[in-house]
Every structure is written in C-alpha cells, then in structure tokens.
Length: 461
Image (cartoon, rainbow, N blue to C red; front, side):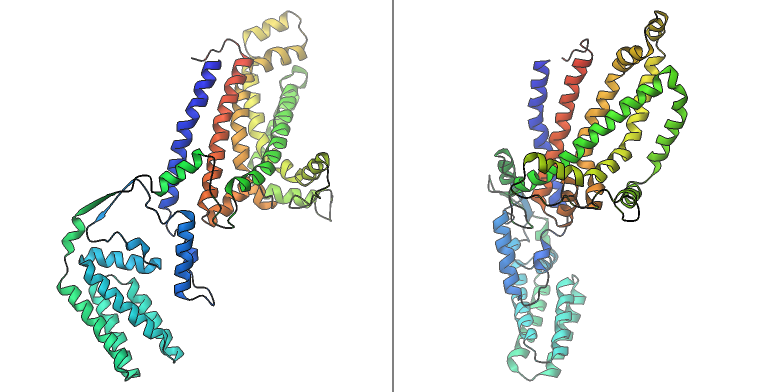
C-alpha cells in the first residue's frame, strides 16, 4: 500500500506538468491578449499607451518568445512584435505576407505614421475626425484596391482643405511609396521558413521554472502575488465545501439507514420522489428561494444575504469561525440541498443491492437485529460506492461553488476563477487550475486509502 501511494505521489509531478503546459497553451491561444491596455483612455496619448504597454509586457515576461523554438516566414522581420499598437502590428504582418518586401513595407509604414501625425494636427474637429476614421479603415484594410482608394481619398481631402506644401508632400510621398511597394513586391518570401532557437529565454520556460519554484507570479489586475490571492480565496471555499460535504454525507447516510430498514420501508417512495423533485430545481432558483425564506424581512430574517462579514483583528479564532459560519449558512444549505439528491439516490441504490444478497437473508435468519444488519452488513458492504462518491465530491465542491459564490458574493475560488477569466488574469487562472488538479489527484489518493481501510482484501500493485 505504501509503495502504491508513493507511486501515486510520483505521478503527480508529470501530471501537474502536463496540466500546466496545456493551460499555458490554451491561455496563449485566447485572442485579445492584454488588449485592455491598448484601449483609448481620456488624457493618455498614443505614445504613452505604447510605453505603458511595453512596460507591462516586460514586467510580465510577455515580451519574450513563447517557446524554445519559433519559426516565421522570411517576409516577417523578427522585430515585428515590438511594433505597437496591436492593430498596426497586425496590419504590418499582413502587408509583409502580401508583398514580401519588408524594407519597402517599413518605408510605407513610416509615411503612414507621418500622415497620421499631420492629420491629428488639423484644427477643424470634423476634418480631424474624418482623417481618423479613414486612417482606421486604412490600418484594417488588406487588399491593394482598398488601400489605394483610402489613400486617394485622404490626399484629395488634404488638397481641398490646405495649401501647405509640406502636408501635400507627405500625402504624395505616401502614395508613391505604396505604388513602389506594389511594383517591387516579392510574395514568394512568405513561403521561406526561418527558424530561431531561444534557449531558456522564453515564456514557457520562465513560467514552468516559476511553477517548480512555487512562484505563480503576480496578478495582472492588481499586481499582488498569486499565491496570496489563492490563499485568501481557498480558505473561504474550503470552509464552505467542508461544511457542505459533512452535511451532505451525514444526512444521506442517516436517511438511507431509515430507508433501508424494514420497519421504515414505507418512507422509501415519498423520500425518493422528494429527492427527485429537489434535483430538478435550478441552483439559482433554489438560492433565491432560500434568500427570500431565511434572509428576507418578510419571512425569517435569520441570516445575512451576502458577503462574509467584518472580523476585527482582536477576534479569537473561535469568533472568526463563528462569524464565517454564520455568513456561510445559506450558501452551505443551498449547496447541500442541490448536491444531496445525487448522493442519496446513489447510496440508496448501492445499499438496496447489498440488501438483496444471500448473506443478508442468512443474517436475518440467525435473528440478528435489523439495525445491526443495516450498520454492520449492508452499510459496510456499500462503503466502496460511498467512498467513490465522497472522493469525487472533494474537488467537485471545491471548484463547483461558482454559482453559489457569485450569487452570495463570497470571495472564494469559484468567484475568483470567473473574475480572472473575464479579466484575462492568466497567472491567477493557471494557479486555480493547478490547485483544482492537485485537489483531484489528492482525492484519488484519499479514495485508495479509504478503499484499503474499508476492505483489506483490496490490494494495489
């Protein structure tokens, strides 16, 4: 048994590596990475936003290549990622892949920046707005006809609105630069692959090294350490899940003792029908009903509606736990009621199957008391399915309280996961996934130990 558990623990390492690698890849595939820093903000010019974004990339390590090896086409320069904002970077990548001649693409881009700068200096607000819209369309355009049409429209508008030779010269140079790019394009270069070796100087290596060291990084939202954020959230979720887990299995076991007893078999149908009805009630509706019944002033105003309350620094650990439990009463009841139907039905099916075995009939024929038969024979032989349910509920409740925590404003793992995904806070998301994965593997190990204790005949090899 000990050797088996050691092997299980050893397999945790490659499993966590695989999960962290998969999460890293999936998070990098999500479009719109850190684009919130590129959004327009009042009082912040484009240069300042680009500087802030570059600092953000350097601070979070996202300025590094993704993996040990990268490849690109010969048409793309290796410095393309340093061009900001992202919309202009994507425009240049498309132009490079379409025309291939990067020096001429870069020259054309330089003229566009000059054109963009003089357009912002227009004194007429309507004219300035027109130029901004046209330039936005230009950086979104990909085909030559559309680009030529937008450039011609901008040049004609400048000719009608100004006689400044410097402005007209920029317009003419921009148009000529694009014409030269069309005449000297080399589109075949996009089919020539270029490989680069980055060694350990890449995002994946840095992320994996930090995870091995126990450093999950910092949150992209508030700059706090990820492990401190997880420590705060997991404590609340663990308390909620532990209380719910104890209530679920205590009620399920005691109730099935009654249902399986011969003298109380008449309770079987009404209880199972009630359980079926409870199982069909949506979780958010159940939460609303409990809030109205137990927290509303119109009925029983017994518990608070949301949050975890305020705890003073001078409070003892007993006072802290009592305050937490008081605020977690309705969420715990809600989570218990929503989860208990499945446990009751599964445990009842397992105990009913054991009840029909021949050795149970033999025990009754020997005159053994019914309660003793239920406790020592039926329940004991139905422990294996119960252990499977118990070990499965540990990670399920830890990560499955998302709806509950959002409804009742509980700062736990579920709510943190939702907020982090919406904010694209990738380090926190990765930390939550690793915690959930570890909880799942720990639950499997606990289940193996309980299997062995419940039935010593079970041997693990």
